[in-house]
Image (cartoon, rainbow, N blue to C red):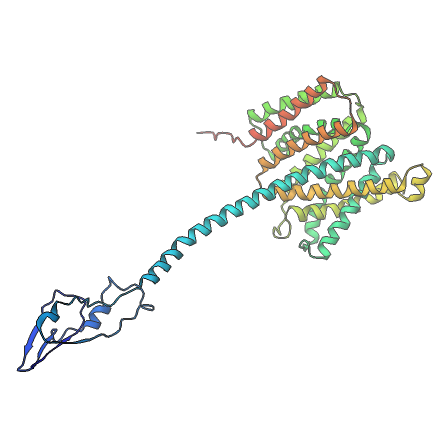
Length: 416
């Protein structure tokens, strides 16, 4: 019985004609002699997905059949390019990446929001404790210069501790930079000294009501020394600040001129520090961020105030002197230490917040902080407050909030 053998060579295209070669005993189907299926297949760009992962094996089929019905058997000349399992894995990976990235961004944003909220809470909390404990110390130990020097001394110890154990980068400061920072240290020392003098004379709530006039001094000093003329919106926001402070001062039960002018002098010196910081350009920006600058100013303030303290008040913070004055030494030392730690902590946290938010947001937060401190001190010390006094304080604080909002309104450029 005569058999017929068929030999097939795979081809990517079924459109090209095949030639039939006959012989007496064998019939063979073949492609044109110059057609190379492997070369043609590899040059096809339609299936070239990944030349490193896809392997095209050389295939041949040898079929024996007694009849021509063998030709009707289905046959696919193309080898599978990518298996179904590989395609599914590829699709899963492609869709998983953006989902995880989006989730990571949302988680990061939530963490930053919680961190910022925690910093604002610590800022307010440290400020409340500072004012309460500081007032308690100044009530029994009315020596504001010594108290201020102790606060700078505790801050200096903290700064040296952070630098020694690499909790914060120790800066490299030149003599020229110290000379530029010196004016800032002087006004910083005076500002804190005048604040403690005011806290020792009047109620905490009244001191902070007067300190709400800081925007007024900022506008005046910026216009005088920086040439920054205020807009009408800014000038308008100053009116309720000045009017509110005047109304609160007239009706303040603990009012005295020493406490009033000390708070005013604190406003002047603190805003002078801000103006000077704009004029003084520190060259080494990398090591002179806000926290580093505050740390250096704290050390310089201690050096400046220590001899003044000895000259003006003598050495009165010793256990022997406190006992002779009939004071509880342990209580005075504990409250002074807590007040000093909170003073340095709230200043540090304030600069940390300023690095994360805009100056306008920080100014609004500072306004809210003043409200929190006034309310908490009134509740803690049971300060008598009349309705008119409360109205004056509220108007002044509302003016501060309005100032912080209109400060960012830029004047329209003049057209020729």
